[in-house]
Amino acid sequence: MTARDAEAALLDARTRAVATPVTPPGEGGERGLALVVAGERYAVPARAVRAVAELRRVTPLPHAPPHVAGLTAWGGAAVPVFHLRALLGLALAALPEYGRVVLVGEGADAIGLVVDAVHDGGALAPAAAGPGPAPFVRASSDGGAPLLDVDALAASDLTAVDIAPPAAHRPEAPA
Image (cartoon, rainbow, N blue to C red; front, side):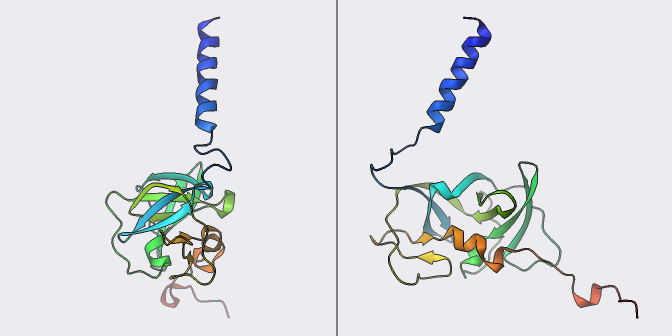
């Protein structure tokens, strides 16, 4: 076996190890992540999260509503980033110094969510029936961390970025 073959075998073994689910299906339920926002924990299915990155290089958008943190580059594409705090109806604060951006959604529907921290959430309990305590949130059936409805959040009009300049800055239309 050549050095190149040995390296390829090592990389293949590492790829298989990383791709192996932490909890085999049917043993312990679906895995989740805990997103910390304003000191509160919110659970999200790990399968819904594409990536978690350090909060850096978010470019603000002029005239954007307060819940829009800006844009960031991810995989060669511009991805809109939103303050999860504001989307949940909580008071907006400055960007957290050691915060994270949680990337959810696929392709052109990908969005980033600014959170204070991300932790392993363990096995998720199913959502309880009925409305949740906040927009895009469902109560957990076991009384644990509330569950964030990532699909509803990504489909919301709040996460569609369409920014028009204020009327004072719009050019006059020809008569």
